[in-house]
Amino acid sequence: MVFSPHPDDAEIGVGGVLAKMKAEGATTAIVDLTEGEMSSGGSLAERREECKRAAAILRLDFRGTLGLPDCELDDTFEYRQALARVICRLRPEIVFAPYYAQTPGRGRGHNDHIKTGILASHAFNYAHLEKLDLGYPPHQAKALFYYFLPREVTPTFIVPVDDYYEQWIESIMAHGTQFGDPAKNPQMRAFFESHARQYGRLVKCQYAQAFLSETPLTVLNPLDTVRGWCGPY
Image (cartoon, rainbow, N blue to C red):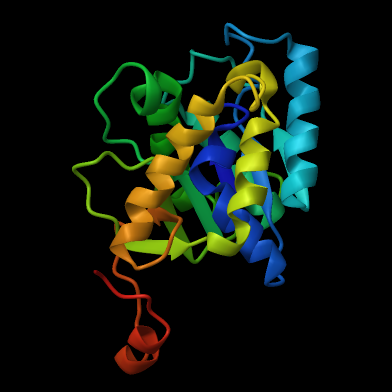
């Protein structure tokens, strides 16, 4: 399950991995915290339709929104509970959220990106608390992974997505009010491609997405891990 500050963020940061996991039999979900109503392009109705198209492209099992105010996210107990409630309801094994230690501003450093990462971190904990009434049984997800990593942050792991690259890009470009017509705006596709290639080069594949875990990951057998590993150049 991916927590997405705005419609399109999950597609950009985790879309290739969602496509891959779905193809391999996993149940996948995106929860948008806001509807992106403050964006310069597109009406609310248009953005909702774009979300539906992107969800269909990624073959998501669930997509929903918390309807929180765009540009106004903050680390409050109320919002922490809202995210924890979704975790308890959907009961994911893995939670993805934007990395929170960013320089504030545009792009990755958007307030809502930073605050979503912080809120998800607290919600990951709150969801397992038996005495916190969230309307659903408590749930302890197995892992919290962060996307939208700054260049200076070394990923914990990188996921090759070569076989799902076109599907991933199509899900991003479904948000046409944000990224324009791909035929008329090839620079936007090139921008996303460059990031995917950057991480792909590190593990000998063409396209990849990168993530951070702030807790150690268990390796049951190092040989099994490296035998399935693309390896660095």
